[in-house]
Length: 275
Image (tube, rainbow, N blue to C red; front, side, top):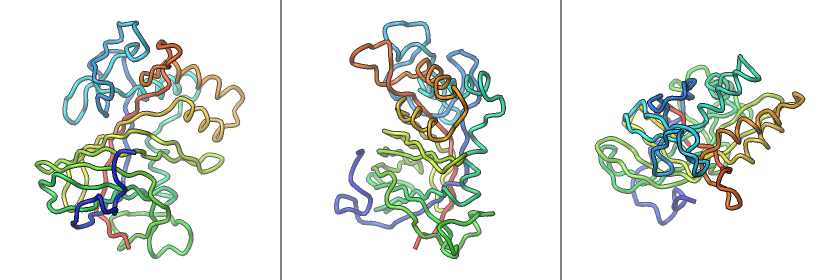
């Protein structure tokens, strides 16, 4: 984990400030050049050019953040999605799939900030991710036409991810142990982004200009694909794509093979009341 559970004695005293995620934006297709733009973070402490062959962390060039212009951004989810779309499913688009889970109400995620004393500057806050539903919903979940119009939400899951962070000059910088991405095709399923970093501009009304970055385990991606698709050969095709793109967690047995795929997304969130 990345820190104490939100709401525990290890979290500072203060207010709880809640937001619900309103949208996701996945990276656009890469061109193979270092200066391509993609959201995320420098997760391995190096700027990869795609020209080195020492190990799998250097096979693909890093990116530039669209928010901070920082270089060395690890987000090979970009290339994996592009290769998948070009080689198998030309109509595949991650953004509307993630956003559809919000609109349906199946996967409305709340970011809860615990122990907040000042949204402008606060050296120590705790974060918690929970799945929520409209309090007025009569079932497990209900479609949501306008997140901002919901008067109050209620949690419909236990904690899905937790961590700690700080706020400086109105910018939240935090680490979480996990962040679930959910989809529904044949069944509802989710895949975890692990060892997550999150940076957002924070106000009482919203979280904006947010970047999220972390690692998808190759084995998790393949297991997720197997649960979601019955297309013959799909998992084998995806395995080739993901293994080629994987750029984190070199295998102890062979440093030419990475067990992790860097991932990054932009998100927006609106203020919420959770009861």
